[in-house]
Length: 65
Image (cartoon, rainbow, N blue to C red):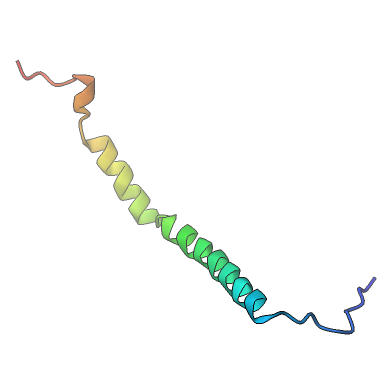
């Protein structure tokens, strides 16, 4: 099954093209942000090690009598 393409391509005004460009840039920025939020496997390991090594002073587990 095939879909017929429209005979006339859509014509956008200057303002519509500007808005489409802004939307396109916004979508691309989401991808960049998502890629920046993903830690690499070595970074994830380092952060887990730091969390397990650091004593949590809020639990009162230390003996500073």
